[in-house]
Image (cartoon, rainbow, N blue to C red; front, side):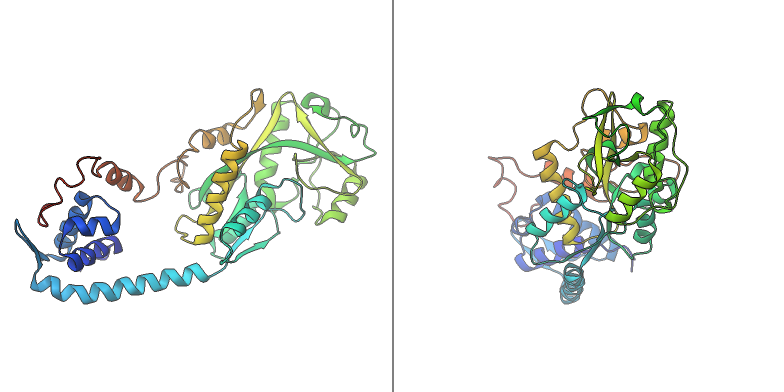
Length: 370
């Protein structure tokens, strides 16, 4: 008995056994008749037995088919029961921030997904840092996180899936007493002589420090020394007032007392935020989040890169393949984040193989026609 018997093959068999008609079974399953016939033949080949007797007028179960039918029904019922249990389990996600802001991507996606899936539970935590979240994701202690996927180590990227969600404009926040605090915007070059805090002392946000380091190095600017990171609104405000260095953040990010957030321009630095999860995760909460990302992204052009902007090459590569669904993990040493999920290519082929208008009845009149 093979170990790779896919439930899709059993569903096709059961539908055909219950209708004794390939055309009606295909309609029930919303697949092309040719695809269903192919699946039935594959199942027969895997089991080494004929399941249906086909004639020009009828389709009948063989003895082997009659024996398989109750077992297939039990196995599919157990399969559906397992999936139903997953659907009722809360989805645990890290919003990658311990403070709130007026336009934080993860906050907005969470709110939209909760509204679209009110019967489920999306359980949020606010520890922050995709580098730290990646470890939790791989250990199955977390389901979803957000952040700069391109800044993760190659080993982590190889084992995680991601969907590009939004290009966020990078800014700096600083205490109101800072000499640069009164500007409506800052040219990147104006940061010369002002070391920038890129959170290099925070092991949970190494992906963010990597972006900051790339930005500063490329523009000949200095980074502030690594420091123990603050946690929470009040502590971050005190931290900025005490050390006096502008801290790299994003436009629409946290609002802190006594702190201003100043956009950077010429160029506008960007950070590509992705929704990150394990590639084997199947959960309606993940589906709701991905739908929310697609909806908000289309409405507000979240992935449209403005002219004259700056984006690291690794992030730009992810952006270039953003049109596909949630990408499979890359192989070690190979960045191919836009590859399709298993089975996706086949589904597309099946859709192309469906009957065109005017041909629907042709080839479905006789139950034995495959």
